[in-house]
Length: 221
Image 1 (cartoon, rainbow, N blue to C red):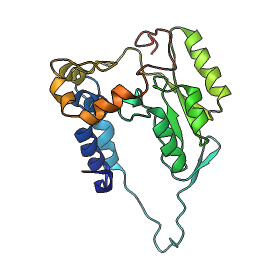
Image 2: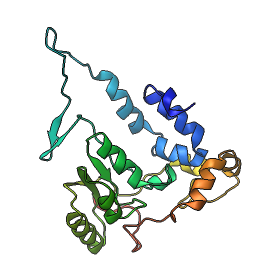
Image 3: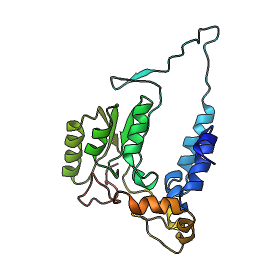
Image 4: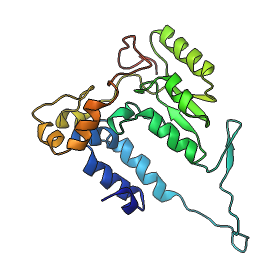
């Protein structure tokens, strides 16, 4: 199965499951505790109906819209995701380039594996920066100033991290950051030599924007 065989979201998910070691796949695919919120979020799309404008010209459909004062080519943008180096050798830069190619916003996570400056240097497209309310406000101040200097267009504030999520599936699969071989994950990593090669030969795995130690959770509700 390759990208050319993917025709919908389910196909992309199947391909990711095939390419990624089990701990890595279930980290990006899963949620916390019983994953009830994840299921509700996914199921909510089934309640959305598309109501077309009938008897209207569709010769030149225009999907563009304006978001945060920036025109984008479609009403979809990439939400922030941490540690993208786990899913692609180029990490955040790969997502930023893809968003620019399709004319939409790229959102960078505070917990990215590339720096704010690295992403800014390779993408001239519209960009959001995702910010946690850190207990150490100097960390937040630094990230805000760096994203401003680097030309990010807007900021999305994450305020629901009172504590870190209890990701039960991560405990079962042996997921760690950075990834480590464990008894639970050994076979899965061994069966994905391509991923292992890219990981070992690529950029060092680190949270490049938060070098200063920060605890999980913000203690802010």
